[in-house]
Image 1 (cartoon, rainbow, N blue to C red):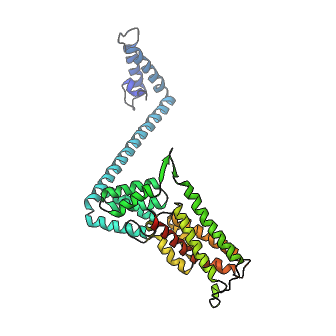
Image 2: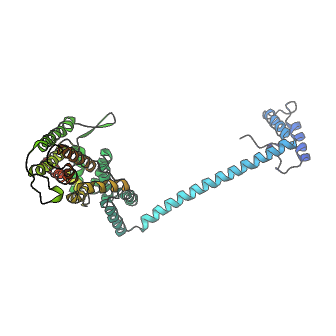
Image 3: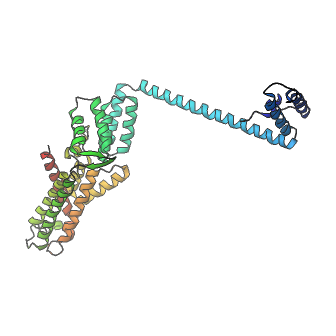
Length: 368
């Protein structure tokens, strides 16, 4: 910013008009280029003339005084903001140090248990925030890294999951669960990087395996549509039109679908879905228990909880969608037969979902 006009004339802001004229005459005579040999005099002479031109005019001087006052206020406000920012930063550092000093080992353990409880109950966002807080306080804790890895893996964020599992292994190298999950993310999913994009190496399995499962479902649908098999559960109202073949077909379609998705790497390892790194039961098992009563109830519960907690899991979601599609397809296939489509639509998902879990689990048991 240019030098203050009052400072150029060597005056205070409350100087009178006479004082301004006197200072101007004195400085003009001193620094006139024809009288002074000082090399700075020409520049000073111009500054003095510019300052006098403003300060000698009452209107211009008032505007200039207002400008100076506003600039002074801005400087003061900026200084206050910087001081407040510094104070908050120092306070944050102090609070962090206090947390480190006051959080004993037992308190950290309590927070870790609370984090595991949040994750086990499906409150993944809260568990994620708490995990980061625990890591800030004690970065040597392995469990928060494992929970963050489980959350990232469930969201399909393979790179983030492998990084968090690696941290968990570093903090607890003797834990076989962390080691297995780290290796499974790296090698089991066969994920590689190609120009910054994620792709699966065995893309043929991704297509071929679900195609085989779909053919099995299609064959079953044809059998259901044209079978003349008699009803075997006439005394049970909600499945009174079902035959033994339909019941077996529903279950085997689920087995074929679950196995096909697992072979095609569309589903994670079954053991990783049934429990977390901390051993808590996963949502897939709980939903399976509800699906024994009614699949659609479990599906609705899953959607509502996942929407509320923003905790959708890719593998569980895929299985739910496939089971829904297979159930609806077989219900439509029942239209030409004596089987009531509504009964298949309402209760068929129970057996398809359980079969899907069995097929998924059986395929995983054969994986290397």
